[in-house]
Image (cartoon, rainbow, N blue to C red; front, side, top):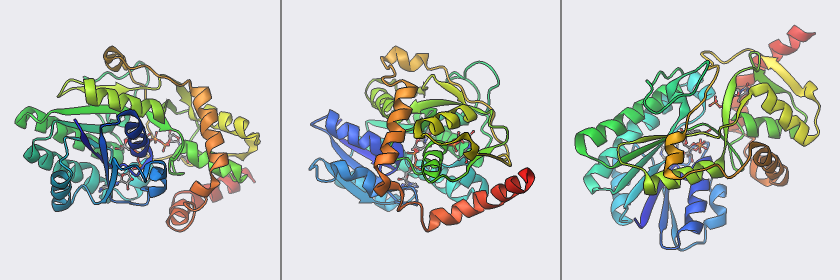
Length: 344
Ligand code: NAD
Ligand code: TYD
């Protein structure tokens, strides 16, 4: 393997993976392929932008011609597909782009990978494809019961990955990661949204009773796991990637406020997300058997993340304008208004 196509590499986890791979493997070329949607951001790749082994291609994974040309021109050996629409709340407001990118885009990539005889195709998936689990932990062989349009689209993409392996023998791999946090995450997901809102003393809209449980995984540990599966994973197999740190949303929120020295009065309970999964939890023994172990504790990683947002306002302040504000209004204005009315 020499030339790796990182689709969605201008996003949060894909850019962490691209930065890590450039530094870790001096003989690899990293070609980032990204549509630069609202979530794609070339600032995430600034640390490697002048590296001669890094290249950027602007393109949609659902655009067959551009995918084909890129695979050919860069003599791609392996594809790691991070490209996706990723936010559950946006998928509830408008599922269209989710089906186009996460299902059809994945299909186009697979099809061009097959034609080009790619050595490895790694699909970055999510624990959300399993649905919610009240007790115990999901294992890789469990049935998929996705509940949001986001989760259903990711599950659809995965099923195509499976079919391309079983039917055409494409050497595919799938990772299913849990809730990931860290620097450079678009401030719509819980951690970066609440950190940046709290810095500005704004209300933190917690859905429902705040007692939903997520497993929290630091972005560097997630990127590390993807690297390991890419090199050591068995084609056709699926690997769960867990942070093995379950927390209620309210506890995560309290920790963020504590790290920032902000009052808990910023927490505002608002109307729940429809179809809100109560708990995600993964068993990741299969990944550990490949040799993976988490390098960061949750507390240390969350403290580093909060510090990063405090020190990098240049990165997030300009994002929280324009389209972001329109989305914020659609998602939160009415919820917050009702919450304020209820408490007065
Ligand atoms: P992100 O939203 O930060 O980044 C997604 C990237 O994909 C952006 O750069 C965007 O421009 C690009 N993109 C979107 N549509 C595209 C298209 N049609 N063609 C090319 N590029 C396109 O997402 P993220 O949080 O970094 O997630 C990356 C992957 O990891 C996704 O596949 C997601 O499902 C998966 N995942 C995320 C988490 C998490 O907690 N964030 C957890 C598990 C799995
Ligand atoms: P999120 O970061 O959107 O990830 P996911 O839905 O993929 O797990 O949300 C994490 C949890 O936080 C989830 O249970 C929903 C909840 N949440 C809120 O309570 N308020 C918010 O404003 C957001 C964005 C999320």
